[in-house]
Image (tube, rainbow, N blue to C red; front, side):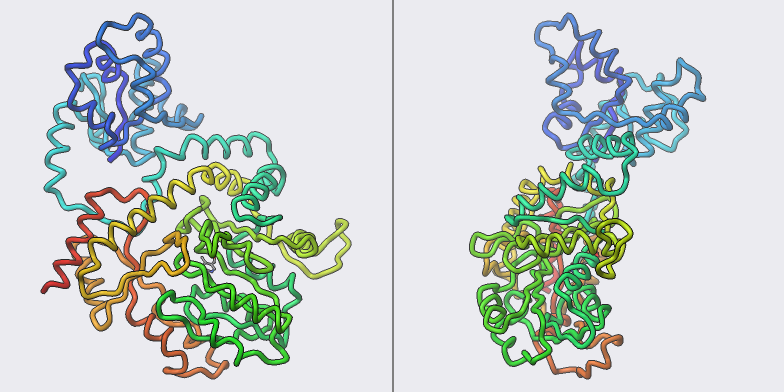
Length: 503
Ligand SMILES: *Cc1c(COP(=O)(O)O)cnc(C)c1O
């Protein structure tokens, strides 16, 4: 839970820390996240000039808290109460618009609220924290605001810089991100694009794939993988998956190669790389391009090489549910070929170079500068998040391994667990319903394999043609794995699954 700490609470903390010991411990030890309004800071600074013996100093206090960002609009909205009420009115405005759980104040009479936000005294907060333990714990699939105490300051800093510069299309925000991502993904170049889907489209266009061409890919992925191939007039040729990794089975690729085959498009599904060595070898023998759909796999590794550096081109998505998400749509393409890099950059802006002279038919595939700034600000946290996802996965695996379900296998480290997917033959939908009843979210990625989608009926597939993909679609369930899951949430999930499987 997240609370705004009122100036009077913080002043009392400076003067008489003992009186607030128990409530302050909740924030100091990060059971709860505490926020402070910037209007409190000048007051606290002038009061903390003569610290009393045995009290906290202001830097100590602030190191456990985060400062809320205030927009001019927040201030304007809070002005109605008159100058004397500005501080409290702003606190209420901020607590509401950030969706905080309440305001903690040492003198409740000073804060007049309209009941739309709860005002708590320190003792009430301590009492509530004890009640919460017995309260029902919810486990969502993803909780984006849970990352705000960590990321909001640098992210909003990046956004403001772009807004204040007035440069919204490409420019330095996009260029910096491209350099950072190329380095992170161990490739020479990166080109920011409008989405993961457009990353796939532009990669296929850069490889001259079009009408009459065939691209070998997996039937068990997000729709964009095959949709992009078809949108260019080419034909997706589906090869069944390896049931342990859910990725394309490299041993079934060769038999699908025809004179029209132009490329192989493996997906690193759920955050684990496809078995790339045999794929790259087949591609070399038959002179095919390899395009990695690494939308779920930023930072994933295969034999110590990062996803996106293994094939000719890597395609990434910054969709908010990916491990590195923007505040909207975005994507990026990686390559180590200077020719492909130059071509992708030109295709990104309608194929024009110089401006208004068109060598190819490209499109508007540009990454928004605001999204680039958000992703750049979040990138320094990615390794830490990956560690947390891996440790959450380790917790699930160690607590679920004795039960009657199949757990994800890390065959090619490192798996970055964009999803933690279990297999529960026969009872998947019942398990999902049971979890839902306990307020635990889960998701099915993906209920219908691509070769059986209505829009691909003309490819002529029928049920039973790609049995492993079809079986996975029937049996798998993704459990919440995001980095900010608390220990209580992890335990709640493990207990619920144990209970279900025991009955
Ligand atoms: C998310 C995703 C995409 C598409 O990315 P968008 O940014 O949503 O367009 C493509 N392929 C896979 C495997 C994905 O998970």
